[in-house]
Length: 296
Ligand code: BG6
Image (tube, rainbow, N blue to C red; front, side, top):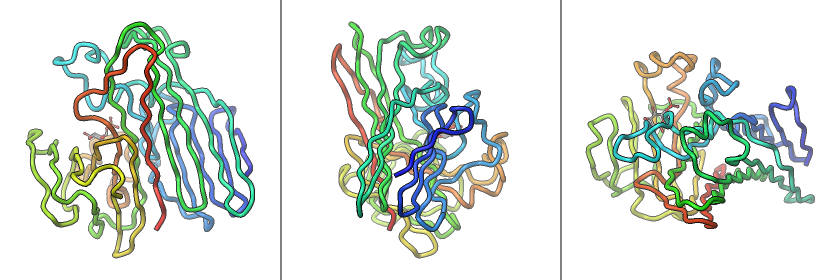
């Protein structure tokens, strides 16, 4: 595999001998692009996204940490944080690559962010000593993203994490997501009511913003099909929730960084995370959560 650092040290790209590729922006360690050997893009990316850290990337795989959604007054330790936290807008360090050669070659890119490398203005919002290690592994048939959180300080801290993946799809009106049957979810477009999914696949015909806790557990794949074709299979590790999001027309129109506006027809977010309640990490402890996305 070849690994290149480009655009004035702002992004890292890797390409396998068979042609599959991945590009990661150091802002947020955001995966911006994942292509198969034919050059087909698997992730959706807005044409007007910011890439300078003034906002999270609108597309790819932004990393949500240490809070999901807006700050809430009922949880004082995270009440000063911006929506979805600071990891997606911070500049991460590229720590290096590991590769395996041969017929099943793969490449792993490692990125780090810690309390020592964030600005004082960010520390003022969340004063804990932490370390984040994010690994992006590209294989011929899959992409794995793994986040390890460590508590490097004396005080315990609470956090949430989410891998906010924007999948590139052909036609949202034909998309079906399976693996969420009979699962409880919080419906964020209906006053955060708690509902139960039926035994049918999830389909889309309006703004959708739901936090599922899949009944079948993390190893059971979440499958996205599009125009009758199975496209992606997501297997989670230690991430108990799946957020399903599509802004639909009006919400897409209201977001200045979402272009084209009818791009909502070509994307769906299925986001593996731990966002119901809080993960608590004591001094010296570590948490690891991951997703593997398989192409079908
Ligand atoms: C989703 C949330 O994960 O992210 C939505 O469930 C939110 O409520 C969406 O609108 C996008 O968030 P942001 O901060 O990137 O605009």
